[in-house]
Length: 154
Image 1 (cartoon, rainbow, N blue to C red):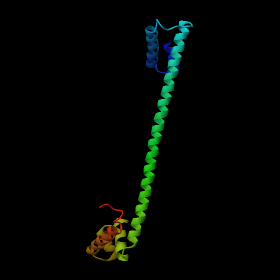
Image 2 (image 1 turned 180 degrees about the vertical axis):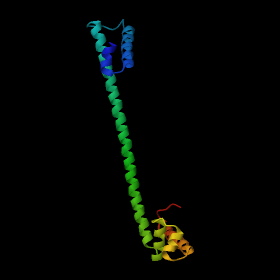
Image 3 (image 1 turned 45 degrees about the vertical axis):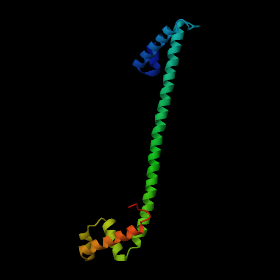
Image 4 (image 1 turned 120 degrees about the horizontal axis):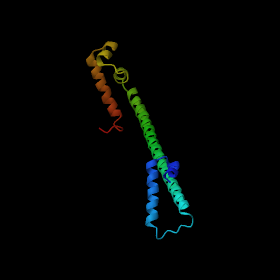
């Protein structure tokens, strides 16, 4: 019977447990069970039914796990999509605020924040002092903060 169960399950240990469980159930219900076929047929049919139940339960668990993983991936994608949308919107608002800066101030700010140049590099590139660069960046940040006050929680 274990070999028969193992054909369904490919798990020796589980097959042994099933057969043992069927014998225990048969023994416990020996006074009330009415077997209308041979005992051998009854036992093999019981093993078959129990194996099919286990396979069905295993499939349900796998389907549930698969749906759970898909849902998690979907939520992550939704979060990523939402974050991308928010980033794009904030970038557009920031770009609009930067475009309202005075020409030289905006140029220095772009070099500093968008091209990641150091203040000294900006000063050398534009032929101005580092202090002027610092003052212009400070001015730009102040104007941008004012422009974005509705979007920032400071």
